[in-house]
Amino acid sequence: QVQLVQSGAEVKKPGASVKVSCKASGYTFTDHFIHWVRQAPGQGLEWIGWVSPNSGLTNYTQKYQGRVTMTRDTSISTAYMELSRLTSDDTAVYFCARELFRISYWFDPWGQGTLVTVSS
Amino acid sequence: SYVLTQPPSVSVAPGQTARMTCGGNNIGIKSVHWYQQKAGQAPVLVILDDSDRPSGISERFSGSNSGNTATLTISRVEAGDEADYYCQVWDSSRDPWVFGGGTKLTVL
Image 1 (cartoon, each protein chain N blue to C red):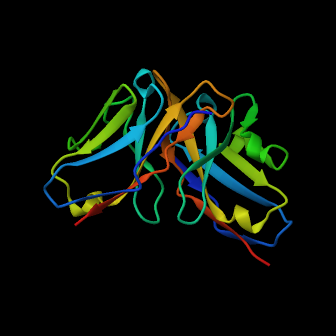
Image 2: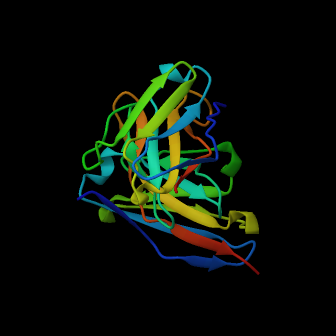
C-alpha cells in the first residue's frame, strides 16, 4: 500500500538545524510532489513547501524562505526537509504528504509525523 | 492570501448528525478537501473535491460546497469520529495550499 514513513523525533538546541526524512513506498516516487506541513502544539496545520522528486525543484512559503531546504534522493525514494536556525517557535510536529491532483490538489497519504523539540 | 474559517468546536450526541463548516470568499468555485486528525495521529483524507469519498471512508461522511461555505457532514456520529477536522483548498496565490484552522468534534 502507499506509505510515507518519517524519521524519528529530534531534540535540538536553539540555533541548530534539523533534517527530517520521508521514505515513500507503494508507488512511483517521482510521479508525485512531496509537501511538508507543520503543526505546532495545540495548533492547526501550516503548509511549508514542496519538492518535486522528479526534478528536484522546490517551492517554499515566504515565512520559511532562507531557513528551509527540501531535497530528495530518488535512489532510495526519500524526501528530506532541513530547517536551520531553530528557535523554540519551531517546536512542532512536521508531516510529509504526497500531493495528488484531479480538479484541484490535495494530500494523501501523510507520513506519521516527526516531533521536533527545540530547547536549551 | 486566501483565508478559510472554521468554528473551533462542534459537539454532538452519538447517533446524531454533525455538520462542520468551512467559510471562504466564494469558496463554492473552489474544490474543498477535508481531513480528519485524531489525537496524536496524522491527518487522514475523508472528503476530496467537495463531496467525493476516498476508498475506505465510511458512507456516513459527506460534503457539499456552495457560495461562501463548504460543509462536512457526518451522519450517525460514533465515538470514534471524535477528532479535529480541517478543510483545505488550493488557491492561485503566493501560498497556494491553504488550511482552515480546524474544528474539534466532540461526541457527547
